Length: 165
Image (cartoon, rainbow, N blue to C red; front, side, top):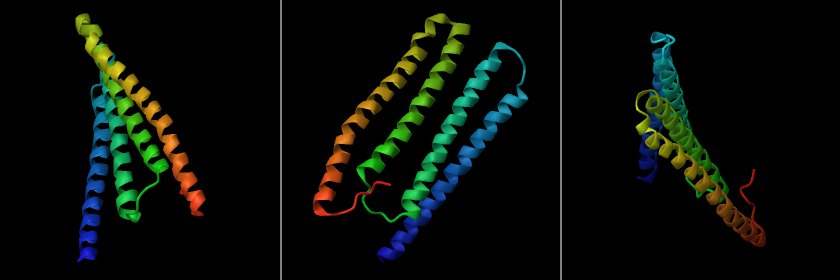
């Protein structure tokens, strides 16, 4: 029964990863199409380009999630991961989120700067949140190194191998 359940879960993850990949590709194509069909040299063009860049960055994040699902949930066995792998995965996700938030802030700063300057604090807040997320990521990495060292030391004392590549 467990074998059948594992096959069903693997099929669901495969389907979800495929759908995410399709959505990401559609978003990228749409972003490029938006620039091509609205190509002109007015002040909205810069905002449209920045918005498309943001959509493409988010699409890459979606591709990374689909890749992670495929590699971790379909190809690999479901054993417990090492702290280093967890740190690397969280780092990648946080960097992508921070970039996306920064780009949104940049797009909104451009829009606010051309329409109503009193709206500038809101996009500036987005950029500050992005910076705080990166600072938080740095703190997380610094603290998680200690855990990685402890896991490696325990494995060495037991005569086991670590998961380092």
